[in-house]
Length: 553
Image (cartoon, rainbow, N blue to C red):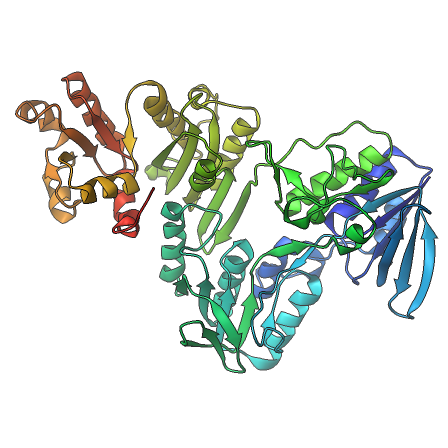
């Protein structure tokens, strides 16, 4: 059997390695247009900043390695020009000699990946404007920096790559501005979590402009739609990626979401003996069951392995994705899995959204607070998605949540997880368990919460309400929410009897725990509609202002 693979980065090489493990007799040939293979694209921002010192950590393997270890022939600098699925052949161009030749296959894997998307910006082709998708891109950025010593940089886009490269350029001593066309940074996050990310950027000396469009890049400036100019010795365009599927489409391969290649669970396309994997393929979302496109390195490696197994008679099948991701921004970790609140609402779920602010471990052991936003289906309690920002322990918790969602956990299930505990690592009730408790209280225990946007709507509606600050007087005097009345928790039982039990009441403390205790007292004393402010005063102070005067429906 002759297996031909187009593409030799994450998915293509993973497919080749698995196919060889399953079948020692197959001929396995990979054609790669670029000169580098199997490289760590996710590590490139850290190599640019100098945090990763060795080039071999970015490009750890070459063609000789795969020939020696797997008996796989990789031809770099070879572009596949066309696919003839009837003749089971491909037309290949050797870019070093311009020689064009034909090769045959029994099984074909298309692993052509994705390319950086460049918006239609005048001047985007200037020598100081870059994308960061390949090792060649990385080397061009480093070469420009070393030769020109830029002092100012503008990063267009605020996704993972945009923010990681912003940190890298800042660490190199540049004045960095991030420009985002959407109303908030990190488009995959909800706005009430993205505000933590933006504040952290600003706190580390990065200028942030949201709701702004770049229209041109000049020799010295980035020009915005409103006419303002940003001095920019260097520009990074981090505006997403698009799948490389033109070759597949011309061969009759069916495309799906985002023009990615449509495959089944065994990575088969609509054409017999033609498979696909990696960033050029469509996935499906585990929560919605719908096709989706999540071009991540972890998913590329996974689908590559499944593809290599499938093509050699194995039974592995792709089970879908949650879009789980994490990145570091200076000393802050930002992670998400599953659906955001906005996406869940778009999908038609009747949702509950809660905010849990807890340290990753006891503060006496150096614990740092993390903010966890969790979204669940009100109808059946199923966990739909989670977003976390914090300095420590974020990776551990997001992986627990991703596992829970994968196996269909409901909110109450989180309470019963037997998670590891010792003071150097966690609190006695882990933040994951607390998250389950809060969700379950809202969904099943008639302890509703009110989010910051819902409170803002209520305050602007003109309706009557009682907003009760349950913190001690000193905290209230330092800062409190407008129109809040201070009744500390330990005095609440004595002072609420005079209040109208039919009027909507909202309790809050710093982070939500005491607010819930006060909510319990009021409900047990016969108050008919009592809410606990999600995330407490700390979260409202952080994000409440973004909702004022805004239609939050």
